Length: 450
Image (cartoon, rainbow, N blue to C red; front, top):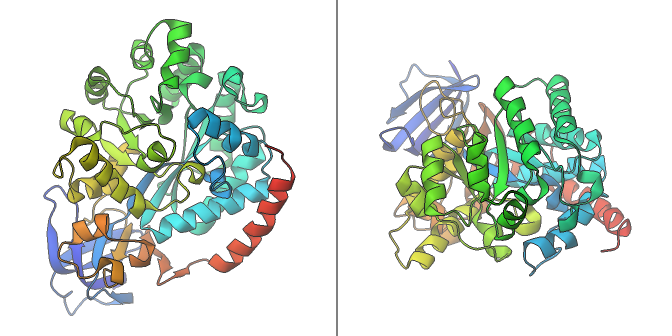
């Protein structure tokens, strides 16, 4: 007796052999995959719930390694501006006025769209730290959707000359105490974990990096940061310390396998070699890098050097969605175009980054990222039988190049069906959420003049 059996699916296991079962089944007990097999499940196998996946593809759940949830309220604000100008027209001013309720609703909006686009794990990069209640509300919103969550409570200890609001700035020592307070308030497990990190290079001092690093090493905490997103990243570092940011981080021992580096548009060959050497993972966010005109990250070069690459959508203010499928398509096409080589990155490469790559980036490769007995039951059913994606000759190509949210039939997290045929679990209503957010957006806009 199992809790769930999915039968008649084409199964992309993403295991070490990258086995594909043209017709198979998955049996789930509790929060784990109990069995993956070819053909029909044995007659002795029964389940509390059975899903007939005839015509569908079963993938491991995708992992979104970078988002700013509050920006889900800010879609389109600051459009057609470069990073610093965009920040000062959207994310920074609105981030100073949003309420706890608005943070909670933004979290539900982002997480529900993520689930609807095949994402089962979301990494929130949180930097509106002026009031602890904002973090609590964001976490509450994430948890309410059933998505697997990583909450990254970051800090800024400088940066006013670049437009960073004074209320966001705090000493690194205080920030680490706030991280500890969150860890005391919430129980961490495989469904929810708390990281930290510096926000961005131009809002972090060398002393801040060192303080955070000492904290993380003493408590075995993972960390993430924006790095080399634009040329601005290095200007402050060269001005203050006379060296490149990657050189500085290497000098203080910051480059480790606990680090998740976000954007990485301007990595040099030497940077890539060091990331590979130290085990640093990259969160590649193609949509905002295009939207803000920041550039194109050297992803094929990083993969060739042995760097682990994962994917992220970034915040919706610089993407305008939290659609993981759209991110996957952009990640492939932009590299083909810039390299003038259609084979420089493939559909299977992108699925690798979205699932096993994401699991490695968050330190959960033994539990997530592939469909294997004993691993967590995070999986999605992809239905290609829609106009955009049919006929389906190659499931990987169809998923990466010809899909949309309508193709996600079912999303399963930790063995629980959290989204199925347009309906969310836990009483969450898409139409009701849209109505409530519309009211709150008007309140937010009335509270600010940009």
